[in-house]
Length: 227
Image (cartoon, rainbow, N blue to C red; front, side, top):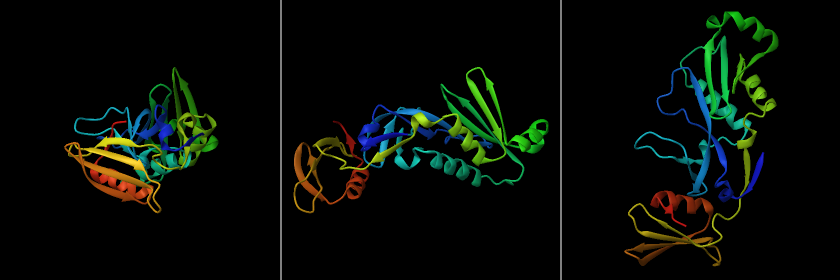
């Protein structure tokens, strides 16, 4: 697992997301793809080079980034819990394409009677086909263990050591097109200062006490950093 000193070090590195959010098939438990981080918007949001439908955004909330196997398991289980189906006698099939991503689907025992006994006996089946790896099991826990054993997602998992979000002055543009400057502050009890502009003239300041408060204002003003 990679370790980063602050969210800024994610830039140019690849992260894992569930890309299958736009009209997914009914049997889908996610399509887990890796994308490069283009820009950090705030401690809560990053921009990745994800292809998205028209009128959508490739800006991702950090909560949607899958950075460890526990988060991956939670994401798969959340997808399954939203399905209005019986969870008895289900098989989970992961098709791993090392160049593109991993698609996970569920199927019923009845559609796979020829392999059910083998799965029950061993716990899983693994097939290698060209540049793909197919894992079939009746347990999400076993599926995750197979991912771990075969290091499927290790390259994209990470931890971040939190530090001050901005140590230098940064400039951006707000939702109305006006300039915004965010600066670290040395004043007692003030961590950052946001300077607001109107037609290139400063007209107000916000004294910020924490990264959480800073993220709130960045989101509220829809600040897009330009440097």
